[in-house]
Image 1 (cartoon, rainbow, N blue to C red):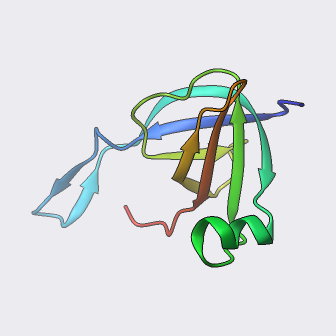
Image 2 (cartoon, rainbow, N blue to C red; image 1 turned 180 degrees about the vertical axis):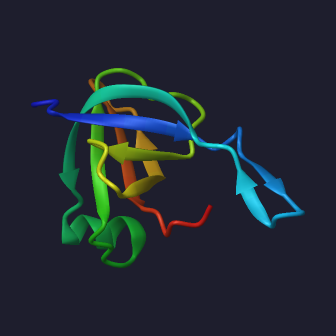
Length: 105
């Protein structure tokens, strides 16, 4: 298995809502950055797991354990943000199934 992608985990815990401006202030904080193997979730598997076909889901496999607290990941610093849908710890690697975020906050 080739770990040719860089996964960056971000937390929004530092962001606070300002009622005067009606905006969230503060930047998301980079929690960790680790190498990973990333593949698309197949159509059949997506239907089995989620009951529908979501073409924006990815399977992320890492050797190192992901951080315990994070809000979203970015794959290779591309613009899309992915949120956790489910995770597994098989014998060898850590596996996360993430789906593209709707972009709120």
